[in-house]
Image 1 (spheres, rainbow, N blue to C red):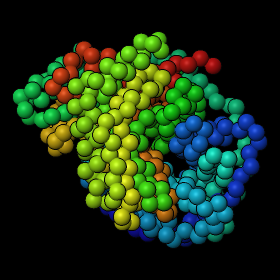
Image 2: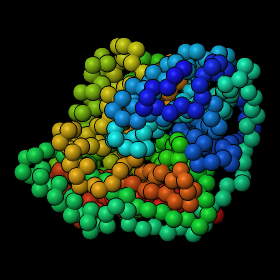
Image 3: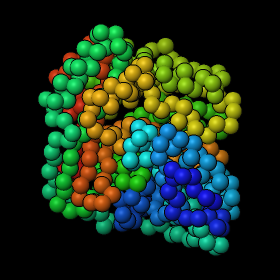
Image 4: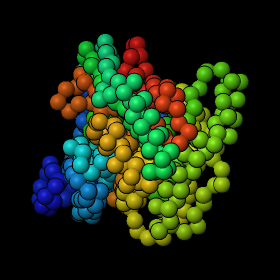
Length: 431
C-alpha cells in the first residue's frame, strides 16, 4: 500500500502478512514477562496485568502517523494490513491472529506521533489458555518456541533532574490554573510535569516491566516503542460487543498503615474537591461512548481503588456496542478525556499548552493493542516514561494532577511526586 503523506511505514506491503496462532503449553512457573528476549527498547512490547495479557517482540510491520488525523490514518493502515493478511488461527480468542500494539501522542502536533507495531512474535495468556502468534511479511509463516530468559540487566546508577519546570515553578503553574478556574474560565485542567533520567547503563525494558508488575499487580504493565509504564486506567476495552472504560480521577497518597489508609479512603470518598474532579471525568467518558453504545451503565457513585502507593476514586462505565467501531476508534472518540485534559476540553487543552512548557509526547495518550476483529484494550499512558530513541541511557518520566477550584499547589506537587514513585522505584531497584 502507499502510505499517507503524514505517515511513515516500514514496509511496502507488496505481499500480505502471514500470521499463524497456535496453542502453547508452557512449563509450570513460566511468567509471561519472563519470555521477552533481549531486544531494543523500541521492540519490546507488553500489555500484562496479573500475569495475563500479551507480550511481543520483533517487527513484522509498523507505521507512524502525525497530526490531527493520526488516529484515522492508523485505523486505515491496520484495516488494510489485517484484512489482507493470510491468517491461520487455531485458538480464536481476542488477541489471537494479527495483533498490533500501539502508542499515540497526547497532542496532535507532538513530534512523537502515533505508532502501531505488528510484532514478529506474540505470546498471550488468558486464564489457563496460552498461545503464540508468529507473523512474517514472507510467503511462509515464522515459527517460535518461546523460552524464559534470565539475562535482564539493571540500569546501573540512576540520576534524576528537573525537567521543563522545577517543583516550585510547577506549583506556580498550578496556582495560575486555580486562579483561571476560580475566575470562571474553565472547570478543570490536568497539569503534568516531567523528570529527566540519566543511567550509567542502557535501560533494559524488561527490568522496568518486571519491577512494575511485581509492585503494581492491579495495573496494566505496558511497553510500546520505548514508552514504558504501569497504568491503572483502562481508557476503553472492546470485546465481543461489550465496551468498558475505567475512569480514575481524585487521588490521595497512601501511608502504609492499613488503619490510617482506610480512614484516608473514607475522606477521599467524601471529598467535594475530588468528587467534583471525578464527576467531570466520568461525564466526559459517558458522553463520548453514548453514540456508539446502548444499555449504558454509569454508576451513581465511585468506589475507591487501592494501589500500592496511592488511592483513586474510580468508576467503571459499560455499554453494548451498536456499530462496528473498533477499539482504536473508540479510544480516539474518548481522547482526551477530562481525566487527562480537563473541562471544557478546548479551554483546558489551550491552558495545558500555555502552562506546562513541555511536550507530553505519548504520556497521557492511548496505549494498548488491537486485533483484526477490532477488539482490543487501550489504557491511558500514566505512571510512565519514555526511553529516548537515540540514547538508551536517557529517559523522561511524567506525572499529572487534576486541578479544580479547591486545589492547593503544594498538595498537587506532593501528589505528582507520589505518582512518579512507581517509575523511580522501578529504575532504582537493586538486583
